[in-house]
Image (cartoon, rainbow, N blue to C red; front, side, top):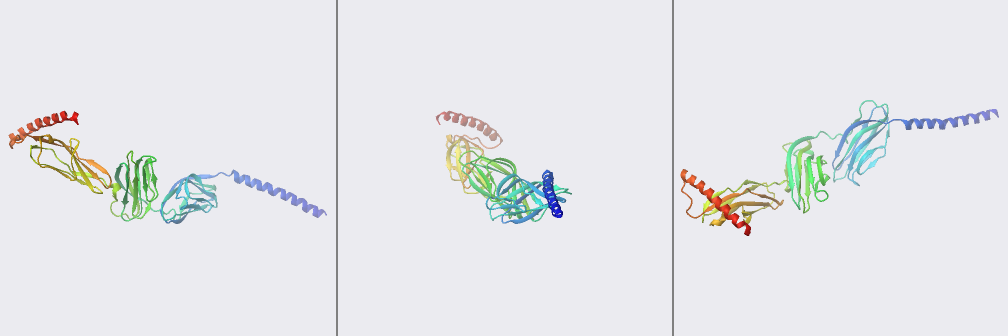
Amino acid sequence: MGQSAWKGTSMRKISGVIPVAIVLLWGFAAGAQWQSETVNWPVYYVENWSLSGTVTKSGATQVRVHFSAIDVEEGYDYLTTDSGNYWTGYYADVTSNSNAGSSIGLTLTSDDMFNGYFIIDRVEWLGTGTGLATKSGPLFDTGTWSSETVNWRVDYLEDWSLSGTVTKPGATQVRVHLSTIDVEYGYDYLVTDSGCFWSGYYTDVTSYAESGSSIELALISDFMINGSFIIDRVEWQGTGTGPATKSGPLFAVMTFTETPTGKWAEEGDTLMLTVSVTGAFGTVTYEWFLDGDLVGAGSSTYVDNSLALDEGGSYTCRATDLGTDQVIESPPALVLVFPAGSLPATGMAGLGMAALACIVGGLFVITRHRAKAPTR
């Protein structure tokens, strides 16, 4: 009887002690302070990844990681942890579940389209925590990025839908850095085939990486307001042989290599003016203007077989690249037309008289055109 009573008493005492101990232990754990270490571990992934990596803090009893950003293609690419996290889409300022021990594993799985990234900016832990936090595994073994400085500015126009390619021969991955993007917010767009999408104003941005030696960009604009972007650096992994190049209509920049020069002529003379262009992507059309009025079209050479006195003035040529809609206009060439037989003889004296004639003729042309201007 006494033995039975003693057993009951001891069990009651023990059963009362256990909850108290649990409460005390729980309170200790709840009051434990998470410590943290700042890191900067960006991972830019490409297509068809299924890679894992481990973050370790030696001496920790629990560990977790904080992300400043996660940007993985929603519904198709996934970032997971062995502590039970599962992310697909865009997130900012998120912390993983904690994992018991000194390490936590992460896995990135991507499909065959669009790339993305995540950035671990803090490692947090419970326990003593000795030494610096480390990362390891193929997920974090992204290699060293090399870079090449370029200066590729694109000033776009209305109603563009043009693409271009940046290539670094020998690269296994390539991306571009843009010092400035200035495209009309909500209406114009700059995109890459690695999954970037920009609309608005940005500075100091790097595209997602594209596997292989090339990355493609496209610019889509509406019918109002123009803009620009500047690629100032091409970055790559791999051997990288030769300089980076750009190609395609997006990067086609047409310029004049020859422009018309001014001259004087007599009435009835033949006038021939010529331009040449380079850098056009598509067919180039030409229009010739005299004091702003269209006088010829179709050819890079303008010919007037019999000049009239009123055909003196300022000639310009407008070239249009039909592949990009780029339009450039030549500097004006002043043509002075004198009555037949009025130009002086050649020679030094003749040249002096010719110079005087140019001045007089120029005044004549200017005066004549000023008189005509109000009737136009």
